[in-house]
Each structure stands twice: as C-alpha cells, then as structure tokens.
Length: 500
Image (cartoon, rainbow, N blue to C red; front, side, top):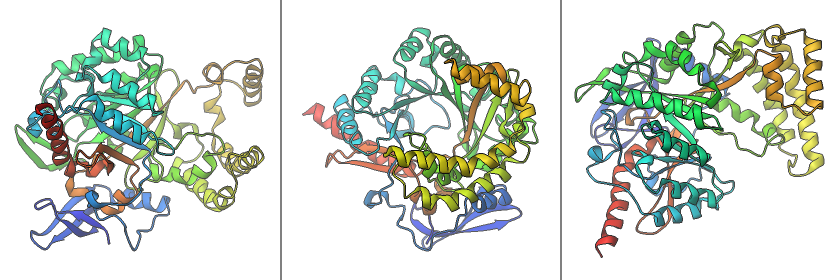
C-alpha cells in the first residue's frame, strides 16, 4: 500500500493518485484529521507517459513505511548528503534549515565527520558525498572536512549559495583544491534575489562567483536554480543565454521546483510549481520544438550495459519515473540546442525503442562478468550490436558534422590515430562544441511524499546517531521530517561534551 504524510499531524496514511482536469493529485484520508488532496503534477498526460516509458507498475507490497527511524531497508545509496552546519551568510525567506529557522546552532566538531566518513568509506561501492547546510563555506575547517572524505576514498562536492565563491581569493583556493561545486544561481534579475534570498546584493556576489570560477577553475561544475511560476519563470530564456557564456566551466544545470510562493511571511498555496511545470518552463525558454525531458529512471535499463564500458555508477539509477527528469543541451558555439535537434526523430521515440531493446538483452548481459576481460569484450560487442544501429539511424549527420559524412569521419579517425583528443576533434569538425546535462530535481514537501518513490531513492542524508555512534541514512526528500530533531540531538550531544 502506497503511503503519504498527513500535513497536519504528520501521521503516515494511505494515499491514492487521482486525476482531475488534466492534473494529478494525491488523496489522503487521515483518521484523525480527515481527507485532504494535494497537487503533485500539473500535467497528467506527461506524468503517466513517464510511467509507461519506464514500464512501471506500482508494486502490490512496499517495504517502505516512511518511518525512517525504524527502517531496515538497504537503499545502496549512490549519493549522500552531509549537513555540516546550519549557519549561513544569507537569511533566505524560503529556508528553514538555518539557525533562525531551527532555533539552535548545528556545527559538529571534526571528530564527528571523521567517524562518519570512515564508515561511509567502507560501503561498496562508495557513494559520492555532497556537503550541505546551511552554507558549508562558512565553516573555517571546511577544507579539512573535504580532505577527510577524500582520505576515505569518497568523491566529494560542495553545495554552496555562491556568496563566498564571489571572493576571488577563496574561489581560487577552492579551485586549487579541485573541489566540485554546486553553485546556486536563480536568474539574472536582482529582484529575484530580493524576494527569494532577501537581498539584491546576493545577485552581484553570485555574478562574481561565476566569473571567478571561469577564471580559476580547471574543471566543470553544476549550477543550481530554484524555479517557480510567477517568480523567475519568465527569466529562463535569458538564464540559458547568459550561462551559455560560461559553458566551459558548467557541465550540469539543475532546476528545483519551488513548491509554494509567499508574500512577506505568508505562503501562497494557490501558486504551486510541479516538476512538469519546470519542464514546460524550460522548454518554452529554449524555444525549440525538439526538446524533450526523459525520466531519469529510464537510464536504469542501460546499467547492465554501462558496466562493460565504465566502472563509474549511474548517478540517478533506479529512481522512480516520477522523480528526476533530464535532457541534454549541446552548444554549437553560438547557443544551446537540445539533443533532439541532432536527431531525425523525437528523442522520446528513440528512448522507447532503446529501452525495448534493453529489456530483451539485459538478461544476457547480466550473466556476463565485466571484471573478466573476455566476458567484458563480449558484453561490449553485444551492447554495441544492440544499441548502435537504432542510434546511428536516428542521428542527423547533416546537422552534426561540419563537412561531408565520410570525409569528416575520416578526419576525426585520423586525428585519433595521431593521438589528438576526441573533444578537440569534435569541436573542430562538428557542431558539438560542449554538452550540458539539464536535470529537474524534486525537493519534496510533506504534501507530496509517498512511499513508492522513497523506497527506490538512492540519494540519502547521512548522519551519526549521537547515542549509539551508528551511521544512519534517510532519503533526501523525507529528511525534512527528521532534520530538526536529529540535528538538535547531535548539537546537544556535542554541547554537553564541551560543558563537561
């Protein structure tokens, strides 16, 4: 039985999806608070199509009860978030995870992180760690925390509001340490920041941050935009045009729907932004008929083939079809164009055929051991024979190549034989100058939580229980129900230790 959370009493209650007027709602019937209904998608057809594409059928039984404090389910997390502080150099009206919003300070000592990373480093395979807050960069020992994670074999990123990155000396230090950054930037209009972040000064510091990163970074980073209807939705065309100029240091664009707007200190629940709203806003901003978002869960079908070509894990594998969605933008040197611009048929149609082929071939691939050279070669050949033909038939080489198909292909091959890098050859001989992943990320609110999606979640918050020393995980989107009490216990534990 699929379960959700009553917004009034926080009880876990049975839920069902209801489609009305082209929208999807979650209907709950709490025995104590009565029936409620919450919007989860503004586009029922697209919501249903994602399920069809992923061949998704709701499970008859679920292990997830949304009671994470007593959960024994192994999520095998691929991405873990670590709260390092709730202190922040902004006081955003939308934030409840800072000192004013929580009513206490959370800044555990280094020994806390040393123990946490030592345990997480033993997980096989080790997940990527993202430092979270609050604002991680306000900690003077943040670089030591980063090094602790690395010493335990953990790849690490820092999620930042970009304010300190606007300081060139600090940004230079981040870049010299080769730290992967997720930089908050919500559009190029000071009024956005006045309303969302409580200060127009934040806008100018974020512009400085982007410029500093372009000047000093040798790697590409992620830009994170919080997006809402009637707030910054009409600024997204400019957003893409502006960030195109920074494509050399940007590899991903994340967009997070802001569930509700507010005026002053009051939330405006009549204006809600769902994942499908974000997709439509971005499609309109790019002004292209050939842009399509795919559910990230669809990429799970290609994981058996992926392991024969790379040892890296698929970042959002196994996620529910109604969670993250993604597409790819390609720079032709002048502007971003969607992947579909370089295809002869719709991306959704190609994806459906590729998934159908994956369903047939995966049982054979799963029998092969990618660690054994001969079987690894067999797996690669089988995957190429299966997926290459429909992909090659779908590519529009007239738009991809700058010259003739045969001549340009030979020039690229000759360049590879001479030892030149593929990315340089592609820039020289094709219209594929840079690629940027675009991902929509639903940061769930209590009204939209459901056990079907939490059970499949591979992105977790991780913390050390102050009473037992055990390391626990909670799915990212339900952390909002546990954050305050958990962080309070940890803060009190170390405060008591200092007093003693």
